[in-house]
Amino acid sequence: MKFAAKMEKLKVETAFEMMAKAKKLEADGKKIIHLEIGEPDFDTPKNIKEAAKKALDAGQTHYGPSAGLPEHRKAIAEYYSQQIGVPYGPENVVVTPGAKPIMSFAITALLEEGDECLVPDPGFPIYQSMVKFNGGVPVPLPLREENDFRLDVNELKSKITKKTKLIIINSPHNPTGGILTKEDLKAVADISVNHDIPVLSDEIYDRMIYDGKFESIAQFPGMKERTIILNGYSKTYAMTGWRVGYGLMPVELVEHMAQLMTNINSCTATFSQIACIEALKGPQDEVDAMLAEFKKRRNFIVKGLNQIPGLSCRMPAGAFYAFVNIKKTGMTSKQMTEFLLTEAGVCALGGSNFGAAGEGYIRFSYANSIENIGQALEQIAKALASRKQ
Image (cartoon, rainbow, N blue to C red):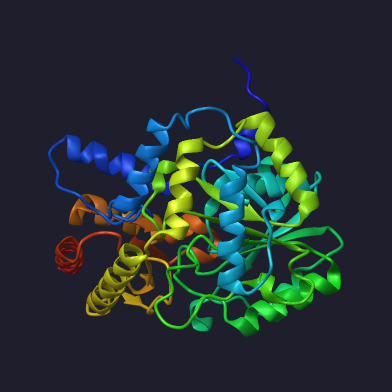
């Protein structure tokens, strides 16, 4: 069977590759502590599961509109309007099976062959993958530790060309846990408006900020018309397996997104969408409790990492990732992740998997218990100490 050349442009999400390696070692009897996957270790809140059960019992198992159930789109528009103070209506919303299709469909709808798209580096690897797959050219925008992993606005300006057709931002950020300040977002918004370039704003971790409040680029003048907001339920509500995401965008793009949904997915599962309405409108106690627990884990893992010779880690402001500087160990990111997996029994991700600017770092997800994180820290410290002897 001969495959299209474009298939070579697609990359896998490295977390799943590392998890597969770890599972193989576990099958051989080795105990592995998993700090690689970006998935909350909590269960989906009970009220959300109950809403899904009721929807199933009520026969909500048939096709729905490609853009999403009207009542779900309305709930999303109301939620976001309240969250960021920008008036959205259901006509601005598209619901998809997971949030990745919003990214994929936006890139498909906006990029022609050879068009450039600015992507954060390090950043979620699927950004570059989907840009390349669609014939575009990803232009990395480095996020540096000395700047708290925020973008450099002047550097962003210098990378804008006549071929720039899309800017992707992600705040709170995967893999660093950094956030863009309101001033950062305003500067990006000015560039977007001045050059008439749309922005894909990945806001999947919007409810995972430990101090202060979430800021969206859509709040600035001229940006509602130029912003595609990507969000979903996986992280905030521990609903990774439910596969429901959504986007808010200009109405004219909604029409194209709905067409892509019709051609590729038909629709998002109806009973899952009804459960998501409950997620938005129901009690938020469990969400608040999850965030409080993540904050404890963040403080615990960062303190522990900074006590291990050769490692250093800045305090992440959001999400649930610790992005650790390993340069003093003398190992590359890939060497370090292999070493941790085989010698320390800890599964992590190499920073270089998130882009060239991620070399010299590794990412730990602290979506695991403090007990397991503590054990991982002990094993890492012991393995690194043994290596020096």
